Structure formats: C-alpha cells, structure tokens
Length: 283
Image 1 (cartoon, rainbow, N blue to C red):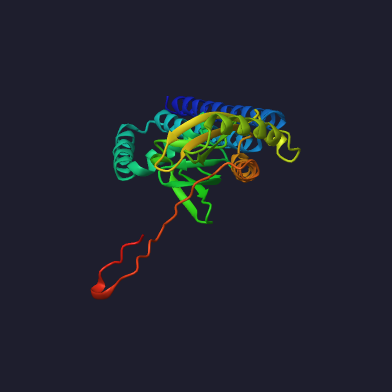
Image 2 (cartoon, rainbow, N blue to C red):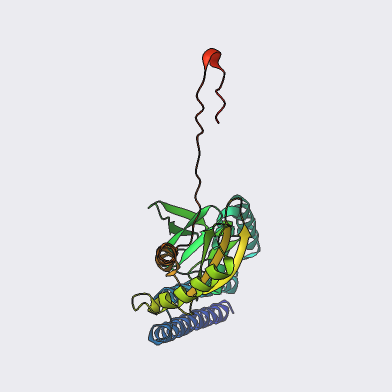
C-alpha cells in the first residue's frame, strides 16, 4: 500500500515537472517568436523597438517565476507536505516587503506603464516637473534624462505625473516679434507674410518644415511694443534650429524693410546749475 502511494506520488511529481518544463519551453518559444517579429518590423523606431523587447523579456521572466513557483508548491503538496504555513509565511513576508518598499513598487509599476503606453522613448526630449532634457535610458525603476547643460538627471518612474513630450510626432515654433506702436501694423503683417514664404523656400530648412510659416497676427500688447506672433510646424526635434533661423530671418527682414523694433532705452537730461545750486531755466 505504501509502495503504491509512493509510486503514485512519483508519477504525479514527474507529471508536474514535465508539464512545468513544457510550459517553460512554450513561454520561451513564444517570447522568441514575438522578439523575432518585433525586430523584423520596419516601421518601428529603434527606441520603441527596444521598449517592446524589454516588455517581452519582463513578461517572460514573470511567467517563468510563476510556473516554477506553482510547480514547487504542487510538488510539496503531492508529497504530503502541508504548504499552508508556507503560504502564510510568504504572504506575511510579501506584506512586509510591500510596506517597506512602496516607493520601489510604485516606480516599477510606473516604469511598466511608461513602456506599455509608450509615453516617451530614448532620444526624445521630455519635461517632467523641473527636469527637462533628452532621454538617454529607461529602466523599470527610473528614467535617465540628459539636461541641456549636460547634467544627467535620474527621474523615478513613480514620480512621473505630468509629462510633456516635445519631440513626439511633430513640433511647433512660436516666435513673438515686438513692433513699435508707431508702425502701421497692416503693413507690418503684409511684409512678414511675404517674407515668411521666402523662408519656407530655403532649401536648407524646407526639409524640416511640415507646413509653411503662418503670421498669426498681434498676440499681445506690451508696454512699448505690439507682439506679432509667427508660427511654423516642424519635424519633431527640429523646432529649436528652425526657431533660431526664423528669428534671425525676421530680424533681417525688419531691418531691410525699415520696421522699427523697440528696445529698452534710458534718456538722461542734464540741467546747468547756477549759484546756490538752483537750476538755470532754459530759454
């Protein structure tokens, strides 16, 4: 009777191990097939491709752990070992770890959401709170951002609440040009519209433009100038270069057409003084 029970337990154990191995093989073959498909698709950016590869590897790792853990628990139960205390201990340990590592768990979940939702990718320019720069690396725990001044900033993924991606799909340049109130604004707008068309025809900049520049009109009224706004839609990440060239172009056009661009000036009036320090009245 005891031998028959032992034989049954061994058969069940071998069956559990065999099914677990088949499950692991299936998971790895499926992951390999998916990885091959991700690497073979041509219309995916390299940064997004790397994110998908990371996601597939994470899913494969989670499934491997789940299969092995389930097999161990079933083997223990098959050979008559009570796993209830073990499960209770694991639950208590898991609760203690989760309470002590809430920030880490929040960062891991945030990193998984960043990868799944494709909120941003490597080589994109983002702004998170006071941190802005180019994304150099993304892990499950943190995002590494290189600021314009060269600083490498580490942003925990759990801290990403409000995010601005400045290089996704397309970008836009907004240039405000201060024009003196003495100028005829209708003439100024007409001249700017004529000149921005020539700017769009520049062969060095035309590949960066998705739409011709548009003169939107007077955006605001300042203390010494009316702000005329010019907008242009560009390729993602090209808005800074286009903006620099557009400002230079507009400045040259205003100087060529005689449009006055006011700037802060200070005038000093000198009065001669007579005897006793009293100012002399001018005729």
